[in-house]
Image 1 (cartoon, rainbow, N blue to C red):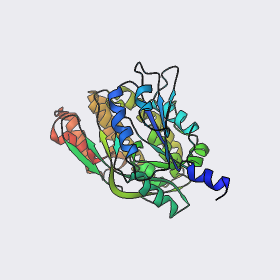
Image 2 (cartoon, one colour):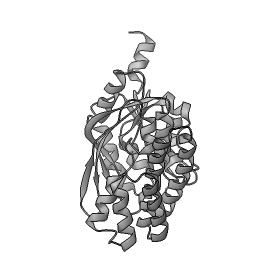
Image 3 (tube, rainbow, N blue to C red):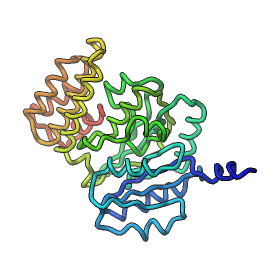
Image 4 (cartoon, helix red, strand yellow):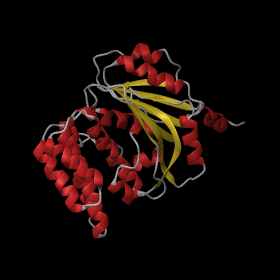
Length: 312
């Protein structure tokens, strides 16, 4: 075996990017789930987004495949992921949030899907979500192939911890948009699916755990992201036929209305949920959310929880 072949055997196939900000108690479970992967040729790039905590002792407890990068100032999770991408050496990049964990075969099964189709840009998996109240729910993959229009209409690709992407494609499309206050992952999936096909592993391979201070609970930032993404989507959908464009607009009005309702802003919720119904009156869940907002039904009740999970 020549020098180049030996170097190739030692080089990582997959770069795992983990952004972290404080909460050092979370990262060990995430790192342990990577260490237990059946695929051995990986590297882990942990990006500390200017935390108050010291992550060096934790990272140093693992082998030299795990390294730590540190931002001098807090720039947000999207910027931390971009830093990880910039320092990645693998052919593929897989994202893992610090409060999530993987099943042992995740990376190997995603890599196998890529190897069977060199036209793919992204491969994702199913996941299970554990809520703060002790409840849990699963979501399996549904969409594969050329899904760009479907992705405009509804977020088909799953959260970042389920996703593996070709590194060269991330460089091509530009990584996560740090100007968005939220929904950066959805924005990136749109840019990838515009040009590349996607596929999935039809298994639950990611455990996601909700945290009290999660960005998903910062509804002000979430709504700002909803509105900014919707403006981008309008431009992308401008040349589509009327019915498709109506379904796309309806979906995004529904998401905005749902998040306004969760933030306690009933009138803006009713406005956007009403627009969702006017744009496309064949989405029953929008009627359900409209009734919930109109009558102020308990935001933590089972009916609202069901409605929120119906469209994601």
